[in-house]
Length: 164
Image (tube, rainbow, N blue to C red; front, side, top):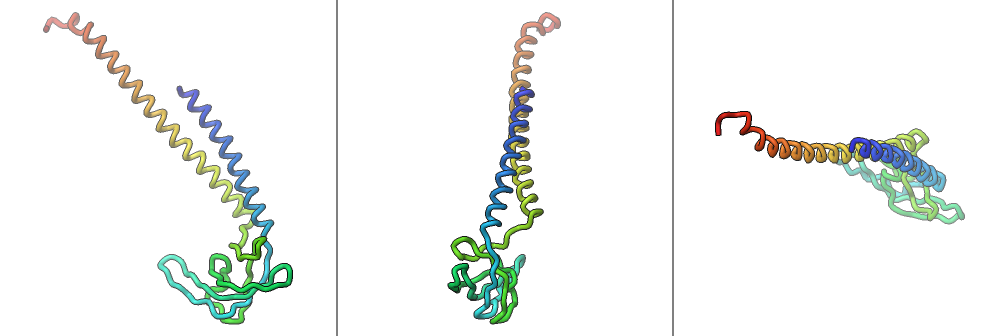
C-alpha cells in the first residue's frame, strides 16, 4: 500500500513539473504578444479608496499599431500610472493583439515564481490527498485487525480464565 502511494506521489511530482513548465511557457507567450504604448488621459484618474487597495479609473486615448487611435476607460489594473495623474498626463500602457489594454507583463522572476507556485500547489494537494488515503487505509486495517483479534479472543479467552 505504501509503495502504491509513493508511486502516486512520484507521478504527482512529474505532473507538477509539467504544469509548472506549461504555466511558464503560457506566461512567456502572453508577455510576448503584448506591446507597449503611451496613453494620454482625457480626464484625471478618479480615485476610489478601499480598505486594502487604492483604485483609480480614467478616460484615455492611445495609438494602435496601424496608426489609428482608440479611447476607453482605463483602470489601475491595466495602467497603474493613472492613480492621481492629472488630465493630459501620459501613462504607460500594454496592448494585446486586439488593441485592448492588458495588465503589464511580469518579469522573468515573476513568471518563475508563478510557475513554481503552480507546481507546489499540485504537490501539496496531492500530498494531502495521498495522506488522507493512507490514514483511511490504516484505519480500515486497524479495524479489521481489532475485529480479528476480538474473534480469536472470544475462542481463546475462556480457556485462559476459570470464570465463565
